[in-house]
Length: 544
Image (cartoon, helix red, strand yellow):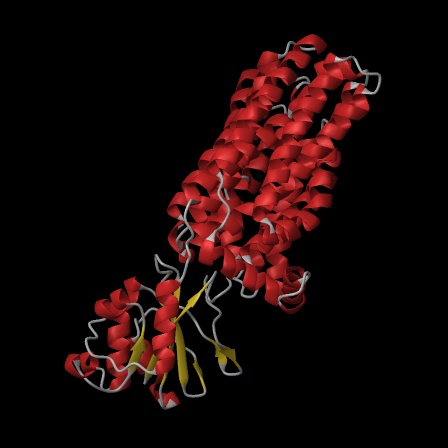
């Protein structure tokens, strides 16, 4: 029997053959993934016995006479039992290493109780490569903080006009209904720029983040200058500033997967990704509430003062980027550069297209997640117009956005923190779909049925908004890590295609839902996505 361990950058590529896919046992090692290839001349009739010895709860499909599985340090007991079965020996025979060779980092070999393994030259090379791996790279949390500050500020800016409808209309000389177009411009520009920014992010991470920070800061100063200078083209300048915010959001949407997978151990990928995404939603939270409090309805002067304050705050985001963010260096930078050098400029996009054309399950999940996630993107803005059109109290209008986004942020952090085991992803995602679609339907009943008095309706809407936000925003970190289980796509490209589809749905949905009947549109969208997901979802890699 020959046991070989190989280090992988992002995730293990599992052996697949005509006799069926192989499955994985356990999760990921704190130092990255270890792949076990156990080759033995085992009769097919003995497979069930080998499976039982290998851990009981996980099957190991044979391809020819080879068994393949994934290993982490937590699986050492299962591996020892598995190796004992293959060698046909006891503990002594197994530890003596007489029937197999092991190439692994010393801590793993020691954990297995293997004291005198025979190591081939190829195995020794694999051992040296595992020891020398530069991943996870340093400065992970500092990079997360720099991205979070820019991301939250960018999201705050995107809500400026939606949260101050009357003041924006007065300042720009347009009708209040036209103010909704600013949010659509933001979504469309993010959708438009995300593909070229994705290419830049993969190859020039530092400049991609720098461009995002610069675009967001310039946008803040441009909209303040447009109002303060009483420019004749202030509407056009504010529209341009919103386009810059959309451009700045493109890098924010694609960086989290790349940062988390390169700078954090696998057990923290979901948490790190969720924190960076939830920072963006935190900006929505404050962007939907602070302007309404700081700006008197219809006051262009107070809106101009708000724009000045946030322009000054842009200096904080710029400083955080300059002081906290550090690009990959040394061996990590060389490894990423070499990987990019080996593939074409369109390699990552081609990988996505190849998986989409060959894996219907992947396309299903992209579409259902995109549709359901679009609801979370649109509600913070659309709800302001919906409630205003139906004559809801202003206190309720101001409270629904913070309720929705605040619950979403807490949900995202909590779900990311507890989602350390990929086997829990299906249960988490199904729960979010059920909770979100049910909350949206009940929201329609509370708003349009007339069965509740105004006070009860307001209370019900606040609770249901929080539940819907927890589900439609909070699930994003987990959904991207679950999608990352599909082999052959780098994590940054997974966020790229996921957000492209979400934004495409969002642009259309925002235009359709920003009116008095908008809750029905949002509920129907969420229900269709939930039914498709619950009925057809299967986790990649053999999960539930």
